[in-house]
Length: 200
Image (cartoon, rainbow, N blue to C red; front, top):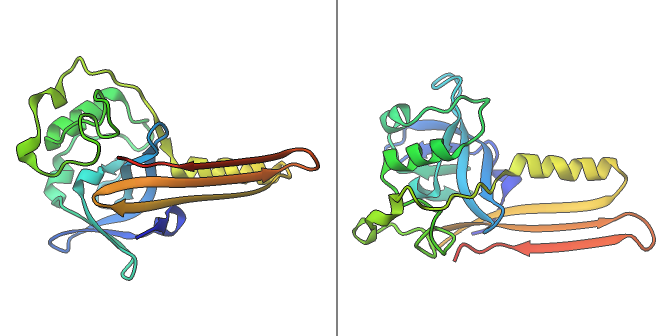
C-alpha cells in the first residue's frame, strides 16, 4: 500500500495493546537509500519536551482506513528509552544509544540499506554481534520530510512551477520513500528529477 507522506501527518500511533502513543509529526528518511529511518511522534502532554522517534523495526502496520499506525512498543519502553530534547538534532551518539536500548541491528556500517541486511530483519535469531560494532562507519544522511516539503514551498515562492510527492510504502517490511520533483522556471529552464528509493 502506498501512502503520501503528507497524508500520514496526524495519523494516530497506537501500540498492539491499543495504548495511544501520539500522532505522526514528521518522518526522517535516509537520503542515500531513500529509506524511512524514524517516525517522529507528537506525544501531546505525555512526554513533553522530548523528541520521540519510532524506528520501522517497531512498526507493525499502517492502516489508512483508520488513519493509524501500529507499533510493537509499550509506553513504558518508550518512557525508559534514551531521551532526546525536542530541539536537538539526532546525533550518532543518540542513535547508538537508541538502537542499543532496543537491541535492534544498526542500519549503518554494512553494505546494505539496513546495515548487514538488504531489508529489515525481524528474525532475532539471524541478528549477529557485529551489528553493534563500535568501529562501524557512521555517515549521517537523515532528512526531514517536513523540511523537504518546505523547500519545495520556497521553490514555488521563487516562481517555479513545482510539484513534489513524497510517498511511503511498507512493502514486505521495507519502508521506503518514493520522490518525484518537477520544476519549470521559464523557457529553456526546465528541470526534471525522479528518484525512486528502494530499501532492498
